[in-house]
Image 1 (cartoon, rainbow, N blue to C red):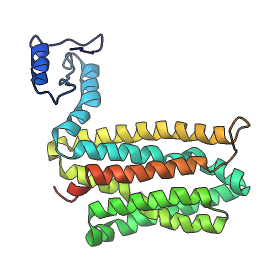
Image 2 (cartoon, rainbow, N blue to C red; image 1 turned 30 degrees about the vertical axis):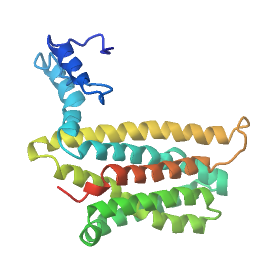
Image 3 (cartoon, one colour; image 1 turned 60 degrees about the horizontal axis):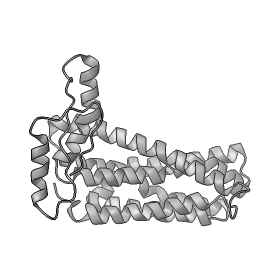
Length: 255
């Protein structure tokens, strides 16, 4: 048996025996222990570290169905971060947009998303339920990302923005589904964890897609195209849809 732990981690006396006992089951390939901050009560900083670092993730593990939805949300934010990463540069490279046109496209995009989130979220939930709204949103996100990669004119881009609109409902619907599985006294930890996951996913995704765009616009690429990042994002969003249906789709409507 091989055990890995950080240099500042202290094992309880019976920890190794408890871990080894799990391997009596021949189907077990690995065992993970429960982790806590040892000096959480020392001062304000250590208490804050315990809440920030472990509190939310404990909520994810403790309540049924929350952790798979967090994985879906992380993947969704990672792949949808293609837009803040490359949108202005893509528009300039693909269509020769001016700064004013870039600003106009972003304004249209924002109005469409605000319209869906502010005006259609409630009616959509009543009509389809949260699970189906998430599914519709991920389908529209996939179609939009691939469509932007194939768009040949501004009019097509505008049409795709309206097709893209239901994507704006994915985040609030997933958050609502997760909140339903967590008691009131753990809602703060849940929301903090969701915020941490989405911010990290967007940060990583923005860097990732900026690198893809830059590479395929460089002389070193096997071919030059401003659209490759959208194809990658579309494929990733399709995988996110599959992940959602496989992990949580069958239980999405259950509390």
